[in-house]
Amino acid sequence: MDDQHDVVVIGGGQAGLAAAYHLSRAGVDHVVLDAGASPGDQWRRRWDSLRLFTPVQHSTMPGLPWEKPRGYFPTKDEVADYLARYREVHGIAVRHGARVTRLSRDAGGFALETSTGALAARSVVVATGATSLPHVPDVGAGLDPSITQLHSDSYRSPADVPGRRVLVVGFGTSGAELAVDLARAGRQVTIAGRPTPHPPDALLAVAGGAWWVMITKVLNRRTPLGRRVAPRALAHGAPLIRISARDVAAAGVRRAGRIDGVDRGLPVADGAPLDVDAVLWCTGYRGNLSWIDIPALERDAHGFPVAPFGLVPEAPGLSFVGMPFQTRLASPLLGGVGEDAASVVAALAPARALVPGAG
Image (cartoon, rainbow, N blue to C red):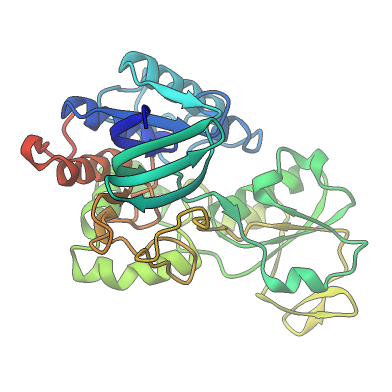
């Protein structure tokens, strides 16, 4: 096969670009494949009012500081522009429109089937991210067909949600922000579920650096506390940042318990049916790795790879970057993928090992 590389990186978002940055520094032949048409596509298609949940000083990828003041929370389009500039500044070659349909082992390493042709690689870095397959709980299948159902992945603005009475399911950061977005547009909004923890805003304002240390160094799989927190974080979501349950209540959003059933086509919470026109599912994502045809790779209950620190000992040469709690709570974030990528690249190219987090 003519199209052969030492490393193929699958995914051209922040995780894939960080991996490519470190591969370039290590002098490793590689190529980045991305299903999108242009850099930052995944960010541009998110909801209109979205801003990062972490400020620029904690959202910097290796080798390119933000041209924004400390404490600034970039919009989703600014993040997309930042990723496009990152690719340009570091000269990262990305093949856009190349969707990988099958990854398997062969005698020389790995074989990849893509929408633009076949490739071969000695090693593969899967950097497709943690938001590839929107998750809707099974209870959604029992709702009356007259109730519009939409996942947050498809939400852009309140205009996407018909009707006046809207149920938002999921009280993580996305659910909280979208509930407020809808309430400000004049909808009667109920949010269901228990809110994830919220570090006090005053604490973050004066000790934001300490919080970043917490989600990178302390809530880390190398620490006893991090290993205890990881399963809960994967099951219930990350803490509420930049918004709290109090902010949601102040916007006029009503609270309900967990959706635990259906009664005559209506969602049930706290033992009572909720008469709503639409349901917005802010219930996260599941891993979408069905295209990886490697029996040795295990998946967890959420469909994400069982790959401690991004590596798969049972399939040498296969690695991951940007997965939820890959090494720490901050692993999927712009400011967290660089160090994880450096560690993975160092394992793939030990003779040219990098200092994790350098840049």
